Image 1 (cartoon, protein in one colour):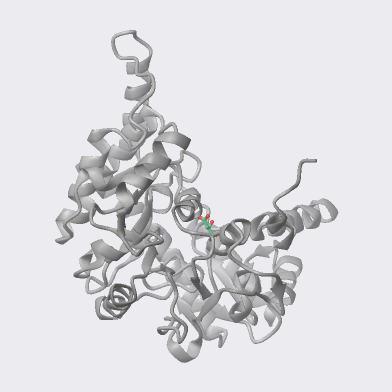
Image 2 (tube, rainbow, N blue to C red; image 1 turned 180 degrees about the horizontal axis):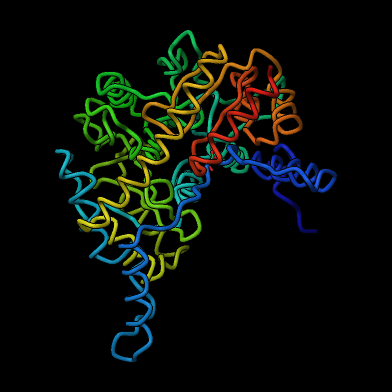
Length: 407
Ligand code: MLT
């Protein structure tokens, strides 16, 4: 008799964003005349930079002749892209990361879920609350939690990120083996200083723990004093893996390209307490289970680092930050407290009421989709998240409608 992985039965019936999409679709069916503005899921709306589409076309043309054709590529990514990433995203900021420490993939979501295959099932996990649901759900699937009781999974060390701690979790009382951190944060938009991040790096080193650092939103950092990578902090290479993406800075949500950094010296421990380097293990996993990102997509991603690509991605990000500024100032005018929006595309708003109820109000009365904070965890109850990923015109219209609906 084939038996299922019963850990799946502990999960909520559907993934947060699928749940929201279903609700919105049902609303649209009964209100076909309503024009909906989506400020919910963090999906970009503006076209790929010209530099990327040009490189994309050229690479496809190359593939159409036998001489230029490429079959299976290196699973870890082509050297041209890994070199460009190492040079521009790390070495240019004083972080000593080399090309062979970069693993190109089709998404930070997949990587942040898949990476936990390298660790024992009984690893103790620390996860922020509120949190991007993927970190938690993938650990539930793997059997690292007990049941869902009173809004939380048993066996997880929750790191509360609340107004009281400026949405930056403090070190836990119980010692974890694996720590998830994300800055600029999804969903709160909070950022962490280099000193703040160093506290976590030092803690991981002291406790032989490992940090999984999600930096998917680093492009939105305007404050030059803030770290964009955890490797800007001394000692992080031994205790941190970092996830990055081309989705939010260069519009690759549909095109798919991301990468994970596993430094050569980064280690975990075997049952005897012996140090085991993670780079060869992740390399083994990647080569066995992943076929690599397609050649044209990697050429398009490489173009992000050309002079034109840098200017165009900067412009894309600036557009979304302008939207974030508008949302923030309008919410302020309406008397709401919020976090984020300054170095992040997300604005985390204190709704002062049930977050799903507020979601329904905005959908029904304003035709605007937000993300209810409760979907990100217990500490998200009473909050909603507005995303700046839309056109400026739509954001202006959405804020007008929200103002009217709440009047
Ligand atoms: C979100 O809305 O939180 C994002 O879409 C997350 C993601 O990129 O998967």
